[in-house]
Length: 153
Image 1 (cartoon, helix red, strand yellow):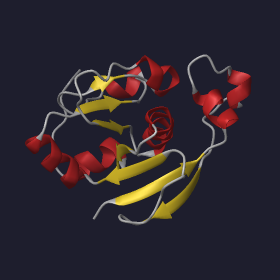
Image 2: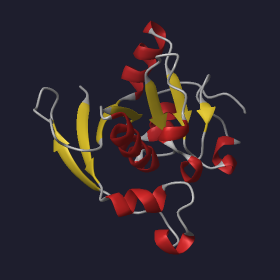
Image 3: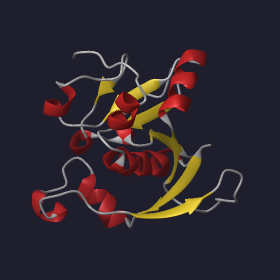
Image 4: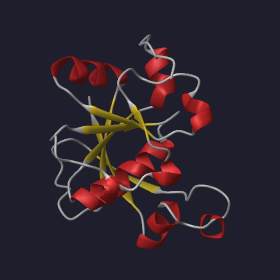
């Protein structure tokens, strides 16, 4: 079952995570975010930054049915350990939803190591698109634990 999260971030928190946000604005680490849980079908109209969490099994099924755009927001060092086949790498510190090309119409699914950073990127993407974004629950750790392959970069 899919869970839907509304990541409620003040604009200043998103700006600190965005490209160009200084180290002092970020306090040397990622900005914590607050998660409000909702169930599929709940009325989430008016919530900003809605992010839908998909399980590894759901993502695999989606990949079998359609051409998705997978974006890995981990660091270059983490990506060197392997990626989900077909994913592109855009580290969180350079992730800018306004700079992405949406012309091919593919649905975007974000992932990271455990789900935290892709949740932050998902919130920024959802705010930019004014519609829910998706990210992999548990990140690539959960993907591997489910027995799905990763490819060398």
